[in-house]
Image (cartoon, rainbow, N blue to C red; front, side, top):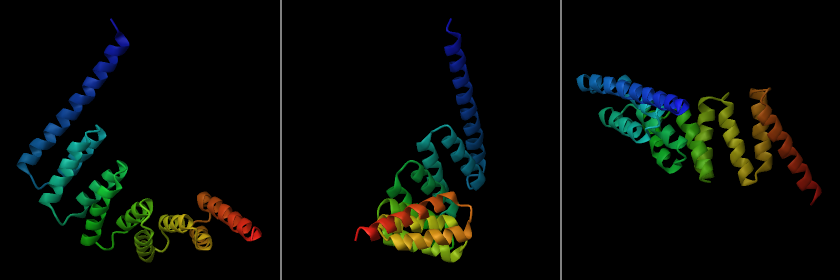
Length: 193
């Protein structure tokens, strides 16, 4: 007699049935075409949408075994580990992406972020500088670089980077705010000397 609970259970049942129907259909197709990359990626995304993380990981791992030179599997698994806050698990996958494609700017950005998070600032800076060389207008890489300098206490370097960001993206409110704060910090440290 509990209609709201019954409705919720029915909704949950339909979601699970859809999930199982879709995964079964793709797995059946993969039995016929085991090397089909698109189907494996779709299957992993379905697993992720239904929070079946271990199945998504297994699907990406299968993709990498079948296609060891395809960067997308490594990239997707690295991103998944990033989303799970498992930085140390993510790093080797982005390194593999760069081994296969040294010009993969996003992998450099992600490694820059991951290394910054683990306080490996030299590695982070190196990856972000590489991304900037490849895409000089990529403000995201500059934001990462400014963050590194800020965390290291290199205020003037951080200020210089934020000024560069504003040249690239004049409407970047985050960069303007950070620049304002750092300039204030610099002024206050000069007056206390």
